[in-house]
Length: 115
Image (cartoon, rainbow, N blue to C red):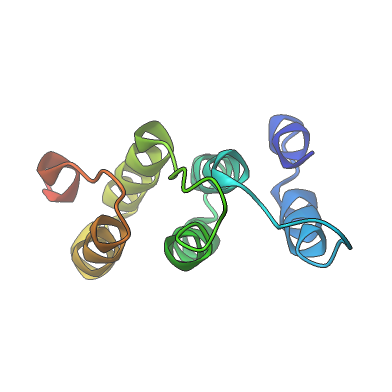
């Protein structure tokens, strides 16, 4: 569902659906693919604060999930590229990279280089 919202250039709707998903009865919550779609899609649409927050949330949520899958490296790379383009990589990148790595996600060293 969130992927369709992102595809249709409606990141606000994707955020609403994402928040709503967490309240659905008999649902374990967003999985790694959903987190990845949100992170990548929000980054592409310039919602970097929200994408970063969701990436940080994924560090905790996916550790506790039943299948232990992590967010794809391509989604994370998209976020780091967008942070670099915005000029906030130096401010946000190192701490975010450390959190993601501690959670077992792949963060390449070159994603954290400002140039």
